[in-house]
Length: 213
Image (cartoon, rainbow, N blue to C red; front, side, top):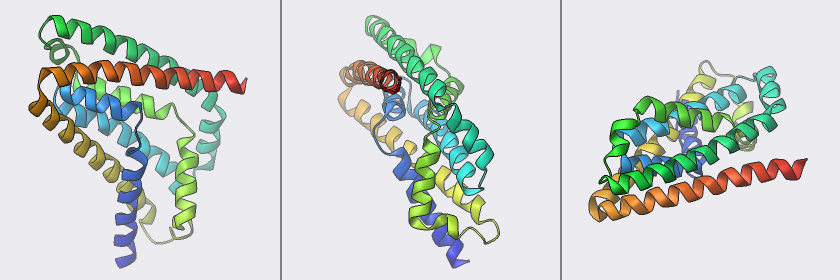
């Protein structure tokens, strides 16, 4: 029982570590926190947490056939992800200009929580190489050699999901608090910065594919 509890706690840490690095999902989560609200940002993050849990389960349960299939198509997936990021950046830039002229209320009436969840789930799923990250982390800590106990793999995946989700809740609350403290000007800066950063990530994704070719 103690071993499973330690496994669960370590898995939560891994979930946080996977989610925490700055990336397009983090920027998108902050942007939705300030433009729509805390709940929208949390549901946005849960999309990424679900994808993280999926990739963790592929590694933890030893689903090599699925892993091989995903890695086989990582190039077209990265292409789709890069194009999606550029489109997303363009839409954010456009909505930011509209929100500025209308007092910042457009986003609340047009973007649903489900859209945020699906978009970040899709965005995270377009990086199949995440499987390699989980495999390296699990192997480095020795998780893959210690999953022989009953329900250990389920506990591992649950911990990763919880850790990732916890990070997005924390980030959403930080962004919301900053919005309340700094006001509409902070929202406009976040919107513009989000469009720029997400666009840069999209360009980098497509450029990396071009280099491989």
